[in-house]
Image (cartoon, rainbow, N blue to C red; front, side, top):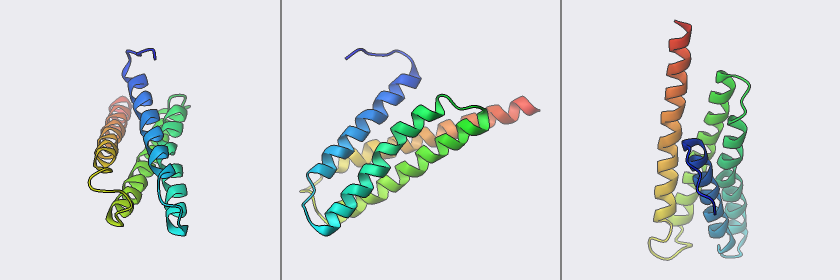
Length: 127
């Protein structure tokens, strides 16, 4: 796979890889009523950041960009809670979800910082 050099594409690739890992986790959950529900939920919230980030890249304005980035953040937080529920119910052995939770938390931090930076740049332009 071709390695892209800009931060925009690095984050996009990272979000896509995160989505793939979420799908992989959902596919191996037990086939119970609750796990099907959690699997559906985590696939929706865990793939949404990659899709919404792509939309943010073609935002029509700075406020539109910030709004789309906030949607990514919201979905990442939802995914984190869903992963914690799955982990506490011990649907996976040991610490199998820890790397996925770590990546989720790192992505949350990236989006919090990106949103803050975008807002600060928008404020400094208007002054």
